[in-house]
Length: 218
Image (cartoon, rainbow, N blue to C red; front, side):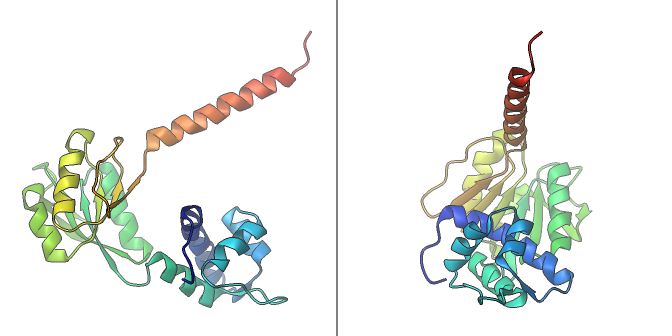
């Protein structure tokens, strides 16, 4: 990466990576900025600006080499290796997440599953035995995990977050509908499904209001 990459560009890089992987599956070896932008849902100018931060400018009249650009984007995201993840909370959502990552081949590896429910501890999910949350710190140290995923009830999330951070976790993906407090140097990404639905509801109301105002009276 040749210069600092804006957060908005970083947020789009995974979308570009998925689009490139789709092209590779179709045995496409070169792609234009227009084709790749269409697959990613952005305009070509935005795509070219984003990729310029990685030092990739394509070749005029040829476009981008799919394999090379995939390697560049994956390296920029840091998913060229096998990043170790510990998942805390193996309910329906955690179960789905573990199985998704296990089959995605996305540069991540769920190395351990942790839960507090005696009915869940000891079960095998995605090829791993669920361990008890009492041993969370030992699990993180054993696996050398730097990334934690929280799919737990909201009332216990902050305590678990603190425990993960205390043993070296510096990146957290949270499916918990609450704001987690973390020290500087720890990154948190929150996936709040309820909030996303509320945002969709807002846009639906706006569209309905515009449609109603456009309808003829009488």
